[in-house]
Image (cartoon, rainbow, N blue to C red; front, top):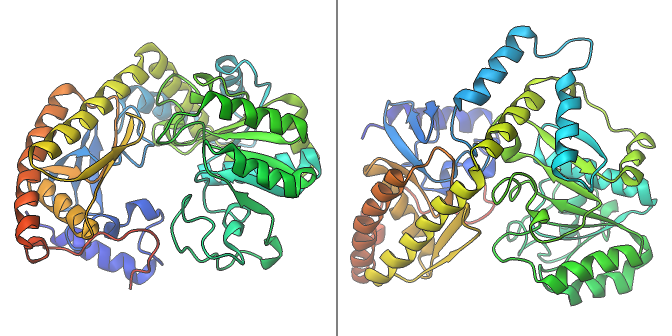
Length: 438
């Protein structure tokens, strides 16, 4: 398999872009530096072509969850092509942003108003700003991963590793103002006593409680009810981050399935099937605080994002996409479990079905991950220890993938038993978390 153009592009990127890529999750060292192709020339459905012309079935990160329908979906692209032809932006506003706000509030009847951004991280920053403006308070209690902005990373100021279980272990919050020390406090999902402790110390200063609706484990009913009760008691804003979970389990926010009652919910990733769009939806009494502060951006007014979102939601609902994502993801998870047991490999499988992951339970886990990536590439698959299901994935894709996983798990088990994995590695071991690329 020729990899010359791919690797040359990576060398060019290292010279001009700190960290090589704009997204940590797409950095080649997260897979296997020297083997992972890194760049694409074309993507369609569930298939990707790299710069050297190699064709792969993508059974990995699915655009890190953005391409929920599949790459270059015909229906979404058709709507976007029309919008581009008519002018993607002008001195006036696009009606699509109004239509999308009405649709989002229809899907989520508790919500009254909507603001837009174009990425998940900035949308979360908008949500926290609105919560702070609404309450007149500064502090935030949160659990889960919520992006790169100062409000979130400030949790690591003056601490050993507050974000270790939420973001990336050992992440240094360089560049985050030290004045934000003591403004963000993490608690563990489903552990209400940790939130109670934060509230006991900072209750009347907390502007927002921020959490994902679900990640690996479903929320306990008592946990959900208690979080809402605490938010009501201290008169703070409950923000639900649907950036990852949204549109995976239903058409809309997964919080609807778990009877979570937020004041604000935030969407991005799957909302536009890969086109940049993010939405902050919420109750009128909270959202109107956006008028008291300053939240504004030129590029939030272009029409491609809302147009793509409208087309994505329409198709998502009509085709019952969530049911398909769950079915495909469940098949992959069961395949991992069955095949690892067959070959005596110790792995842990987790995640909701549409966002599945597994990890090797060995001291050399990152070496094994890189070897898995390498062997699957040789068989024509973009594959890692993560799998985001897309509507473009079909049962035949899963069957073909699992047949190769069967072969690869056998090779890995044998090589690991003999202590030969590192000698068979063509690239470098996968990295865990944040490290510099030099």
